[in-house]
Amino acid sequence: MAYRKTPAEIRRLEAARDHLVVCATEVVADVGWAQASVTAVADAAGIAAGSVYQHFSSKSALAVEVFRRAAQREVDVLGEVLEGDGDPADRLRRGVEVFARRALENPGLAYALLAAPAEPAVGAERLAFRRRYRTLFASVIDEGVTTGRFPGQDAEITAAALTGAIGEVLVHPLSTSAAQDADLLIAGLTAVALRCAGAAP
Image 1 (spheres, one colour):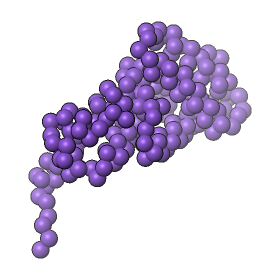
Image 2 (cartoon, helix red, strand yellow):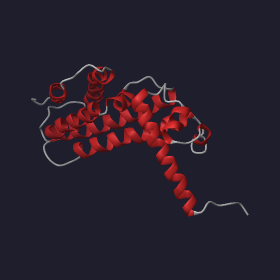
Image 3 (tube, rainbow, N blue to C red):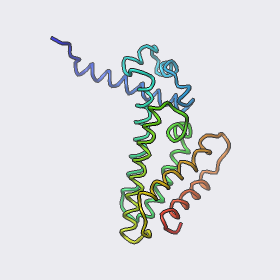
């Protein structure tokens, strides 16, 4: 008879895996993808480097899981705002503001998610999540067009342009240690977002 893990063993392994991902996320936020070696992650988690491979087949697999979990949190937060109640333009403004503020409050991780050089598997995940952001923006823009809040337009094109613009505006502030006026940056970014959709800032 094949050995089967008990529920307690499964819970222990899942907890250990989750702890490893949390530690790996912190390492990536501190040093970026390239420097987030298996050894560095293992040291942060307080385990031997070989133990990492009990949970992930490779560094690439761990990196993908780190990206997926961190990026999904941001998608979920943005979705809560953009899919909420109220005026579409106000939700668009608040969504961009929340996204930008969260990024600026955790610049290391935000830069890793948005633009930092990474291996191809992480790059593929980044593209997939950019599509999710575009879908969220397209939905609120399409609603705004339907209700007359935004002028007629191709919501998908506007959403793609907006997604790219947000990332481009944030890349430099996230990648430098120079002091930034976050409120001024966010005000400018939200104004651009509203103009992009055809609403007055």
